[in-house]
Length: 87
Image 1: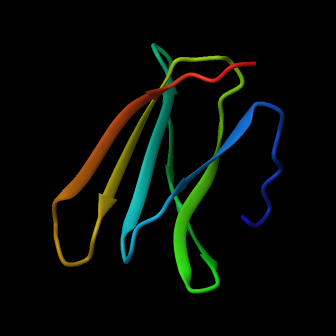
Image 2 (image 1 turned 90 degrees about the horizontal axis):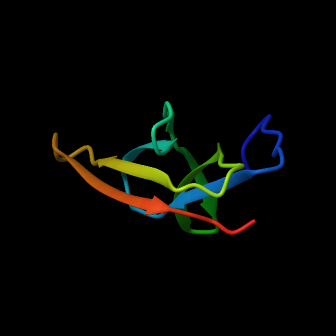
């Protein structure tokens, strides 16, 4: 899926499906520093998605901020949400 990525315990894969865009994500446990990544484009047949792995070993909550930029528009669309997983 992603070249040279070792999936460690507590690592989660985040996937965003959108057409023709640049996608960056910030993942942070509340009150901690953020992991910032530009998501890698992945092709599955004719479908294109963007994804990467993020360390989320604790139950959270985590704040996830997704920024999407399309080449036809300088403005970024932003989605912000919290995620908590069970152990």
